[in-house]
Image (cartoon, rainbow, N blue to C red; front, top):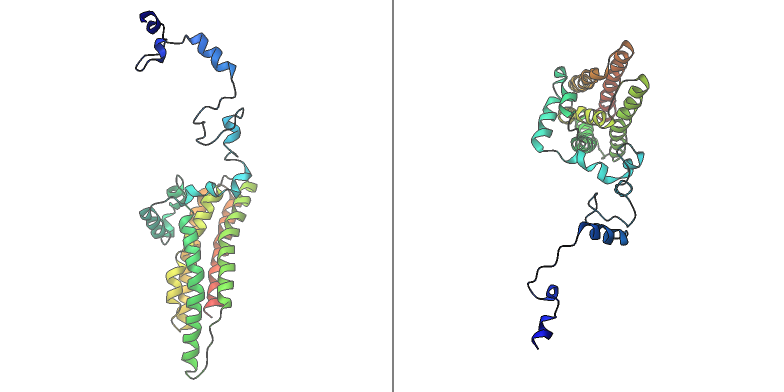
Length: 263
């Protein structure tokens, strides 16, 4: 009986310590089944047996496939409120010209999307209110109808300009051989539209001269903000001409808003 109990393998007993496997045996055992999946893989997700970490990481940062991935844009919406407020306040002081340096390490698209969307609704709403006040001022007995087409025009003009202008500027900078980031240019153009939010409220006043004054001041501030910060990319005479062209383009955008929505 004693011999029978003593013949039990000690590695199967409760509380026993398994024997140390030599390193050579470990390598032989590991090489016998190369399809075993290591967990977790290098990219933090599932990796099929036989595939490398580089293949499972998806498209690289320089691949155009990342443009169609929502996760590629999530870092640009991770921004604190105080940072956004500071940048919004800086957009109404164009002479400072340090906006590009502020967003160099952390450009955001949260405020540009928010400002553009808010401007669309404010242009449509305030434009209709301005038309109503002007109609009542000229003839108190006249009838007035809400113009829904203002929303379509506001969305098309604001979103179109906020996207097309920085994209065109980016490809122009690439053609001229000057470095430029598309995200930073979109951020710059988006923040430049902030001054039109309070301007649209003031342009409800039913005085044509006062509206023109507000439109010209807002257009000058916004265009100056864009042009002064674009000087960071200007190194030659050709680029300086382009900066002036950007100023005039932005100023024409402000005049269009006044003529169409606050005539």
